[in-house]
Length: 372
Ligand SMILES: Cc1ncc(COP(=O)(O)O)c(C=O)c1O
Image (tube, rainbow, N blue to C red; front, side, top):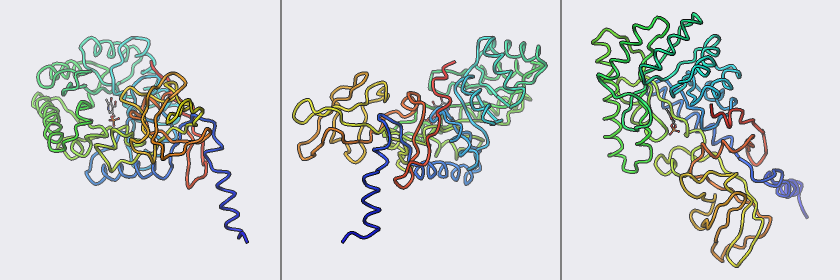
């Protein structure tokens, strides 16, 4: 005879959360998310370094508030339009970790700076002059961090004398305040050999710390050095003189970051459905490039390691091969693990939050698509 617990279990199996969600959909495991958030907050606390998570990974104000509640002191964003979304959710301590160049964007930044502290990275004389000019017109003080190019060769000024020249300009600027330096070492994130990563990360941090010393020898105060991402925080966050880390990917992770920092668990997957079986050993998923980013490689599948192989990923389809021992049927659900989580999240309006096989939330990814 079927017991009532068996009946409830059978009922739950039929009502499995996977079958309540239209696919493709972003799925976040709540407990894993919380573990990742707690892990980084604890690391920061134990190493007496401030935590300023980069929210470009989740683009979701609710998750930013979870990070702040766990101990983060503020957030990093990539763009002014992202800053606007997070400020509107009540966050008051924001660093735009890129340069804001054109006057209309500087205006938007200063609008935010009226009711929050919104700091910005700088790396050129012209930009410093423009920021000061517009801040003076509005009678506002704007905090800036000098962005150092410590090897990523994407943004930033060279450490040492070139950075000192910018610091001197800032200290003469009536409406700018130098908060400190940013030294993001993103080019070292995926180095697999830890000893090599450690040596190269320390070399980057040394450039930042010695630049701070140079500024101070020249009478310029430098309160903050903000650096570090999810692949390097464990080195950067322990380096003497680094005051703040700014990891982003650690909340969700993807298989690349998980392969270099296994302590950070994969909290996000894409739920997808097998829609077709066009030939023996091939199935096609309803998850194409509109639903997952493959800028850093093809997706993998939860529970299958590399056994399912992607043949092609086009706009609406993902064709895969699979070994004959798996008896996949049309309608079956799979969870894909992205190679790169941040641009994947950017493709969705909502994420579904799962705890103990129940859907406990549908959270808005309010800052998706914020490209200005
Ligand atoms: C300036 C800056 N800081 C921090 C991060 C976070 O890095 P990660 O996502 O590897 O943690 C990024 C990511 O692109 C970044 O551009």
